[in-house]
Amino acid sequence: MFEPKEIVVVDDVVTRSSTFLGGVNRLAEAFPDAKSVHLP
Image (cartoon, rainbow, N blue to C red; front, side, top):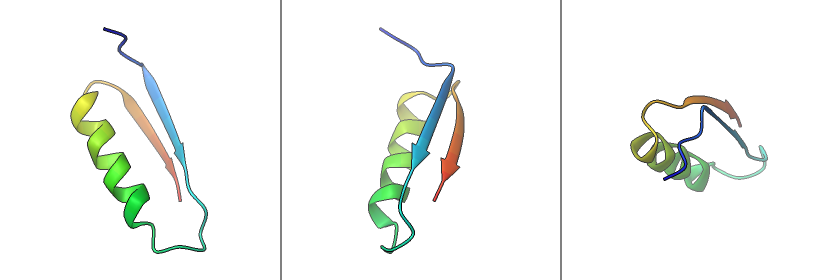
């Protein structure tokens, strides 16, 4: 399976970011060794 080294997640600032945070948490679970960059 493909294991990314880095994941960049971008979200707009208009919403409450609940989908963004849920997605970031799920990606962290799926790819614990990947460096993540969050741009809310």
